[in-house]
Image (cartoon, rainbow, N blue to C red; front, top):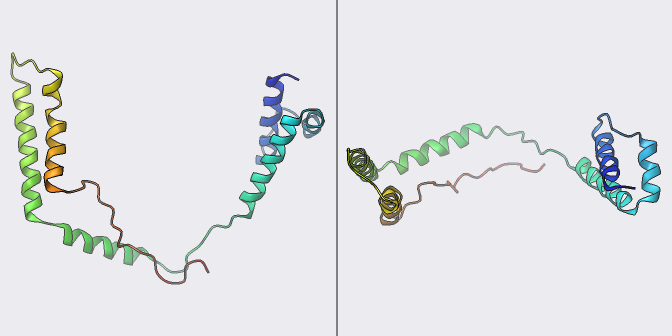
Length: 148
């Protein structure tokens, strides 16, 4: 058989497993699988994967964790508010604004190196602050009867 027909058989088998309308009937698929070892192996793997997926159960939580998470996020935001950091970010914004104003001046021709100034400024700024601009709060933990 051709590779195109084998592909049709595999897609039809997936459609049947998903409960959709296949290109080929189940009988045609079974008949082809008798003679094609590759398709037979693929169909067996599809059935194994579907079996594994059907064994999975969605974990449900009986405890409402949203209020505790919201409180922890609020506490974290309060702790992270630092006037010194605000001033540093305001300075960065001012530097980038001045750069943009200079860049739009008539007669100003910027080379590639000059266009990298904003990126380099931000990198240097965060390196000096030793601050990750994208923080992940590792203090949020679920507690209670998880997994029961």
